[in-house]
Length: 104
Image 1 (cartoon, rainbow, N blue to C red):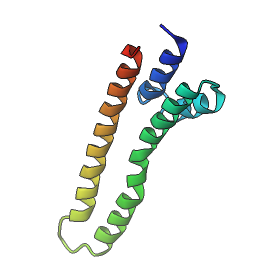
Image 2 (tube, rainbow, N blue to C red; image 1 turned 90 degrees about the vertical axis):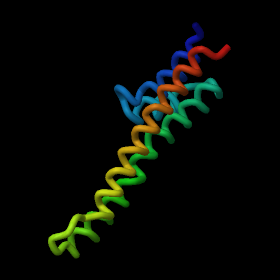
Image 3 (cartoon, rainbow, N blue to C red; image 1 turned 60 degrees about the horizontal axis):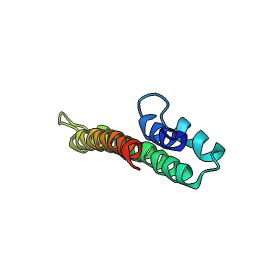
Image 4 (cartoon, rainbow, N blue to C red; image 1 turned 60 degrees about the vertical axis):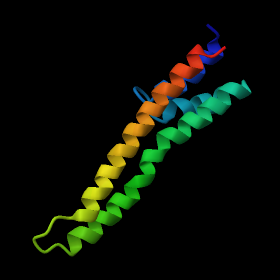
């Protein structure tokens, strides 16, 4: 097994253990362009769920400031969408990591 394949797949699998730190370090430290490309993709996919955080904060401020014995609908929907996005990204990282390992 080639070390560049292992390093590239670990960038995707770092969703389990190191979040966006590992792909960032690999992207900065690696000299192999293929490994850098996989590290950039993994880093982007690890950061996508954080994009939804401002939406959740806005939803919380909007819904809870106008709350009058009603369910905060926008807030609940934004939480559900964030969970779905995070789950899809998590599964995508696992699939990409396996694909990199088994590719020739």
